[in-house]
Image 1 (cartoon, rainbow over the protein chains, first blue to last red):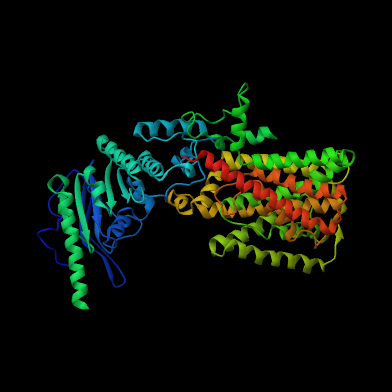
Image 2: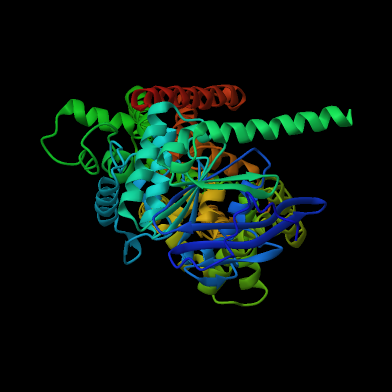
Length: 270
Length: 359
């Protein structure tokens, strides 16, 4: 375990917090000689939207893969609703209500929206699909979530990136996700599209039963809808503040400082 | 036929249209003709249906006395079209889930040989021997699945390898000699198709029934959805917990079954078990029928009804040029040209359709 900077390192392991739906405690992960995560502590409250910011390669993705059950940590533990869970697989994590939405990865382009919503959970009547029932439920659910698409019978291939993302999010919620990880939800998206996704997250926040971690590279876009911001730098969480107590400017300063340090290190070694 | 095409439910979605109630709207009476045409144009089978009707009309009108006869109908539909259509069912499923079977024509070769040997050398009852022949296809399909899915060899290579092996077995065990079909099996064989009324229609009936069944499988069952998912987004399908390997195994086995069925049908129809029958030609025809019919070579989408129509197109060309009296030498030029024209029309019209419904 590496030494922590007591000034900035938040320690979720200290003190009880009964409303935490997710706690990551002292998690480390190495890939060969590379340390991807160094004694990470993170917590997520019920109904909260947490932004996980950081540069490429800072360890955000590794952390997300551990939380969604894709790979196990070397050390440390994960608690869901206070229970220590050793996540065995993505399916296991999903059964505990943890789901991750990757942009463009989740949906099958050649299938309709409603078939995608029900993928591997189809309604059937005997050997045949009960398409009418699935269409009805999918339409209701999307309406309820305020997802705006022309029709649930359209193939996903014909939808825009934002619409696909919205459907992937809606599907995860529909499948009872309580802890939703959104991986770069606004990447490669226009302003209008991005606004649609942000609105969707805000709606989720209003519902209160879904907690969201947004992994973002470009924090300016997501800052407004987040309750709290964590910054990951070189495998450690170096910053943890409610968004009301920080600003885009402060975050920029932190990131710029990191860049400046990296630059100085390069120049020194040259 | 157009009824079958229009009932392809999920393709009837109307983007920007009626807010989700689009399915089935093309089927009601009293719809505007224009709207019907619009729905029709959105069907992926539309192009090939037009080509099919045009070809049949052309040959029918210009050579009515020879083209519109029972003999020719049997030639076209039972002898030429049915084998292509039946094998194409398997190839469509495989292409959709991102695989291909180049060995199916050699399964076609081997299946009747297994049946023949079972009867002649092991005195197996005829029906059981036919079932053993069909099982040969299923087992060969399983082996293709095992090498492709479990051992991770691309199916293009897997099935070239297994194709050589199956063809080699067929030649070795028969010493490359054809033999007549075993007479005691004719009682069973007529159900698969033998010359003379009404049994000469059996291959065509098999093709229609199997196409109808597998059209429903593809568009109305989980198996179909998972097949499309496996080819359309392999990672996404796995993420959703779909056992993609099982789907691919199954589709290889279905294709093997279809190859064996066609091999047995041909053996009974021609009353010959020929170790040189089959080979690559039936497979290529089936794949071309699938692709002309609107199945994507790269996986993720396709239609069995389209492949059926594609098989009619290929059969009409083969049969029609024969009637017109085009000699065998230049036939390849015309045939290849026709395939390319059909495909170019397909690709370009799909592009227009795509542009029309982009959001």
